[in-house]
Image (cartoon, rainbow, N blue to C red):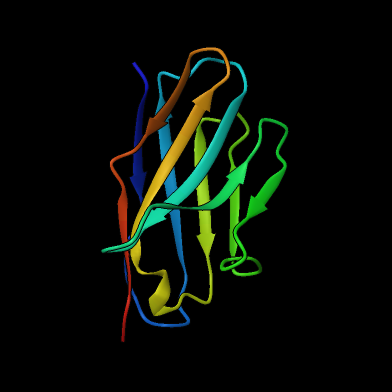
Length: 117
């Protein structure tokens, strides 16, 4: 059974930084498509960043240059480094994994990020 758990969220002042982690258990040893989404109150869930099985990364325009997605060598822990945080970045952040052998997608329960002075 695949389980994802996010950590590292919290309250930060505008201009501050946070690093989110997503620990994945139960994934196969194969390739994984891994992503971060976020959902602000009253808004739809939106894709923030993704990293392919080969390590190629992509970002939505509103976080380019500020956020960086990465994963560890075994591909089972996903990270999101967030710099220059703004109040508009306030949202619940979700980890997403599609395992190319097991299937999916699988979602974590989310980590709250609040940017406020």
